[in-house]
Image (cartoon, rainbow over the protein chains, first blue to last red):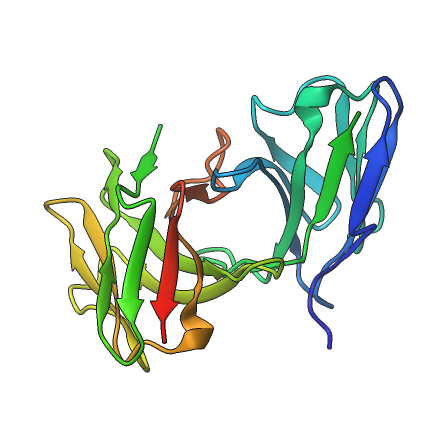
Length: 116
Length: 118
């Protein structure tokens, strides 16, 4: 299967700790997205990359959050000084986008973060 | 900012019957895309169907079809011949054609939990 993969699938951490998640997109997809999904809600957009460039960041992405996609392939999302409110499912999606087309986003299984 | 509303937190349908899930959205744009995604329990989100706003013809994918009413800003999903495997959360999502300003991500509704009764 060559779909979007995320690691780890589950992460439990104590408040104040730093955590890092990884996303491997579908091979050759040039766009990569991060979303956050809390219980009973739809996913909320956090940020996205076109190749290695981070093009958009939502207001939801506080200064404690940072995302990278250093070589335009996999991406990492780091949360520093975690808070209980960060507990959520973090979803990654990738797409192959041309200049004037819409891109269909393919989602990974998510990383479920629990902050104690 | 665009908003997406799914007014049915939960729907139940008998196996083999037809069910319609509602979605409305608010936008000032004329060109955009709409999607329905399915999220089975503990499994990843899967695209069910998509609709380009400039197309008048409603999209269909096998047992899944949409009723797109642009003027009413309505985008409902019809599932025919419901199967047990259709049980999932269904999310309606909007995507602008404009770039920048945080507009490139999908805007999702809160979802509808679909239950299939055997």
